[in-house]
Image 1 (cartoon, one colour):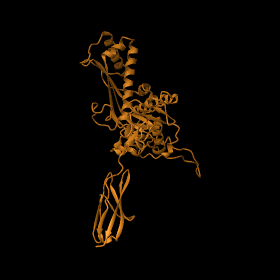
Image 2 (cartoon, rainbow, N blue to C red; image 1 turned 90 degrees about the vertical axis):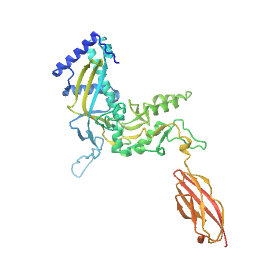
Image 3 (tube, rainbow, N blue to C red; image 1 turned 180 degrees about the horizontal axis):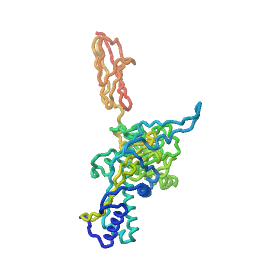
Image 4 (cartoon, rainbow, N blue to C red; image 1 turned 45 degrees about the horizontal axis):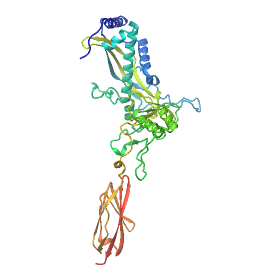
Length: 443
């Protein structure tokens, strides 16, 4: 049951707030939606950006249309050159750079109890300032939450099922998965063969084989830059590494445990600031096992100009003030090829377990020596785990390839004497060979 008590000071502050809003926007009564004019729209955008350090670093842009082409498309292309006459510049390839905005409705609840703290700690201006700061902080937080976790835009959202706004809008990462899946390692992985193991301890098995794919965040980021990011952007000076908290925590723990090594201790402290020689950021609401290499100005949030509508309502029944912000909004990666990532669903923190590595073929029943007479057909059988192909040889010459561990040699093809038969059992992770002697006697 909500606390619905409202003291006199708080009640007066709320009433004055609603009265000021009604007068400022010419409303007929309290609690009505009102449009935001251009100067106030700019002021609101600035307040939202100021509420979050990361939002200051990316693009938050007003656009004219609900659908259209990315605003900064081509800004990272070469624009200098020569021609027979006058150089005409370059025309960017805009395929795949379209955007579409979705209706976005933010509703923020501020309880009377919280409002009472503000009401009794300053005057009316201070009260309204604190309320506005709280609202813009919540709006900014949700913009980032959806930007990193959004996968699609449902007509009716379900915050209980999707607590990070997965169904509010298509975020940056999901947009790249759809437009340029090759830019994301693990974008379509659906089995454990494709898991990527990040193990700062560098664990190895008894034979010395590594039970990891990467042991440092530097190696992960370098691989993205050198092998996933488009070659045109690998040396871009504005590249940054966005890294999940789980990856940083695992790497820092390993470094901090080296307490007797000052260099390791210093490296741990700098890990969330620099990775692979690029600035690093641990971003709010960023999935813990994800890593992204891009530039901050490659990430944009678009809002249709003139569509922002607000409403402030005092809900007596629930003991709270409700602040509404309605707009058309969307997320854009300006240059998809300047975005490279490890998807969080493919990254495993820790070492591979033995069953992850013991997948090379293993022969459990070897070929057996046989003695036959000329003209008699011979059936050969081998049993092997983790094998999908079998290559059969007679005295070094391949005579059959099968998908099972059984083959038959016609007796008419066998010469007298001792023959060597072998089978190579081939799997995804190597091969094993079994050999036997076949003795052919005269009938």
